[in-house]
Amino acid sequence: MKKLYKSNTNKKICGVCGGIAEYLNADPTLIRLAFLLIAAMAGSGVVAYIIAALVMPEPQSEQA
Image (cartoon, rainbow, N blue to C red):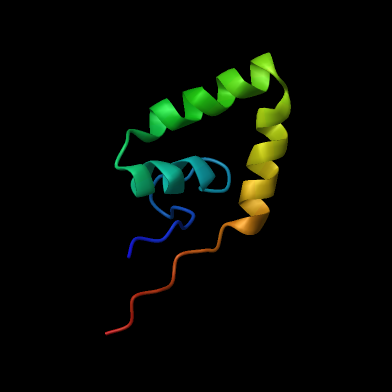
């Protein structure tokens, strides 16, 4: 089962958009643009990003 984590590789601020993009197999730039559009239109995108940054777990380190 696939889980949603913050991204370590596609990270600009907290890794939320990169993590969502990895989960959806989408381009992280498109996810970031969607967040910007939501923030510009309704203003709730910033609040959603902050909540996601607090709630989304960090990826577990791979142990051999």
